[in-house]
Length: 554
Image (cartoon, rainbow, N blue to C red; front, side, top):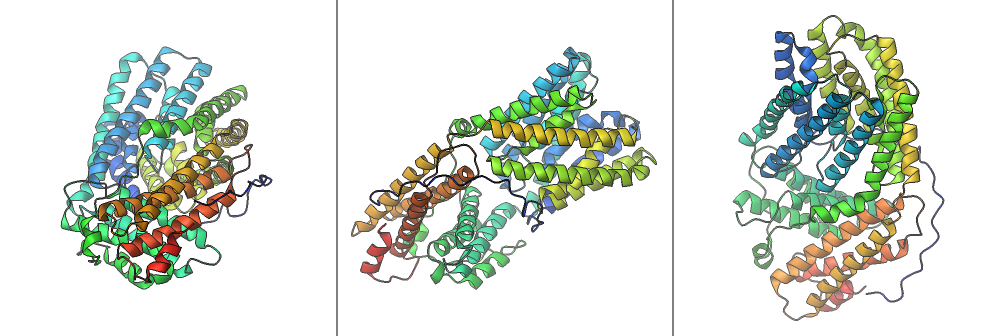
C-alpha cells in the first residue's frame, strides 16, 4: 500500500452541463429485442379488446404487456425469475393504485400515494438492477391508474387482465430461448471482447484510455454476471468463460493484447455457430469457477436512501404544483419528476433537459399524428404499436429521442377510453412536463447524497485490500492456483466498483472534496498487480521475476 495519501483538493465549481446532453449515440446491440417483444405483447390483447368493443380496458392490459420491455440482457434462467418479479411488482403497484382510487377522490391524497409508490419502485429497481427501463414504466402505470375512475368491485377484474397479459409478456420474452438458448451470454461475452479490444487500441495511454478501461471492466463484469457460478457448466459455457478471461487479460495488459483477434472472437459469437475456443493454460482453465459480483439486496438499499427521499419529495411536490395550476392530470408531472433521478445531481440535470426536449418534440409529433389516429380505434391501436416500437429503436441512442415516441404514445393511450381535445391535451402535457422537470430537479438539488464521499473511501479500502491479497500470493513461490484466480477476480471487481463509485460521487453536489489522487493511485497500482497476476497464471508471456515483482508494487 502506498504511504501517506495525497491530500484531497477542494471540490471544483459545479456547472450544469449542456454540451453533449442531446448528442445522439449508437443504438443498443439488442434494441430490436424489447422493440419486437413489446409489440408482440401489446398487439394481441389490444386487438382482442378492439374486436370486443372494450378498448377502454386497454390501460390494464397494457400494464401487463409493458413487462415485455424488461430483462432482455439476462440469461434465460435469470430472465425467467426477473420477469416474474417484474410482473408481480407491476401488479403490486397497480393494486395499490386501484384500491386508493376506489377509496378516495382526494387528488392530494392520490398524488401522495403516487409519490410514495414512485420512490419504492425507484429504490427496488435500482437495488435489484432491473432495467432498463427501470422504474419509469411501473411508475407511469401506477400513477395513471390512481386517476382512473374505479370501484372496489372492479379491482379484481382489472388486476386479472394485467396478470393475464403479464403472463403473455413472460412467454414472449422467453420464446427466443427455443432458438438461441445461450444468446444473452454470447452477447455479453462479445461486448466484453469488443470493449477490451477498444482499450487495447489505446495501448493504455493517451486521451480517453481511462474511459475505455472503465468501460472494458464494466463490460467484463456484466459478462461474468451473465455466467454466474454454478456446478452445471456446459461446453458452451466453459468456452464463453475462457473468452471472458481473455478479455480480462487484455484489460490488464493492453500493450500485449491482440485487438483484432479479440474482435474476431466477438464476431464469431453472433448467431448460433460454435463458440471460439480460446486456449488457456491448464492451471487457469481448471480454476474457472464463475464469479459472483452481486451484493445482497439490503446492502444495496442503504446507499439509495437519499435517492428515495429525492423521488418521494420531488414527485409529491410536482404533483401538488400541477394541482395548484389546475391541470387535470397531475400524474404527468409526477412521472416526469420520477423519470429524472439518476445516480447523481449532474446526471439528473442532463435527464431533465432530455425529458423536456423529448416531450416537447413528442407533443408536436402527436399533433401531426392525431388526425390519423382519430380515423378510428383500429388506427389508434396501430399508432400506439408503431410508437412503442419506435421508442425502443431510439431511446438507447439518447433518452430524448425515445421520449419523442413515448410522449405521443402516452397521449394516445389516454384516448382509449374516448377521444380528447388535442389542443387541451397537448397544453396540459407541456405544462406538466415543465413543472415536473423544474420541481423534480429542485428536489434533487435540495436532497443531496452527502455520503457519496464515504462510499468512495470504502471502495478505496476494498481495492487496497484486494491488491494486497493478490500481492501476497504473488510473493509466494508456489501460490495456490484457485486462490490466485480468486484474488485476480476479486481485484478486478474491486477496481471496477471503485471507478463506478468515484464517477457517481464526482457528479454529486454539496459534499466534501473527493480523494481523486488516491483513486488514481489505487487504480494504477491495482492494474499493475492485475497484469502481474495474469502473467504469474501463465495468461501472459513471462517477462521475468524481477519485472513481475515490479509490476505488483504500488
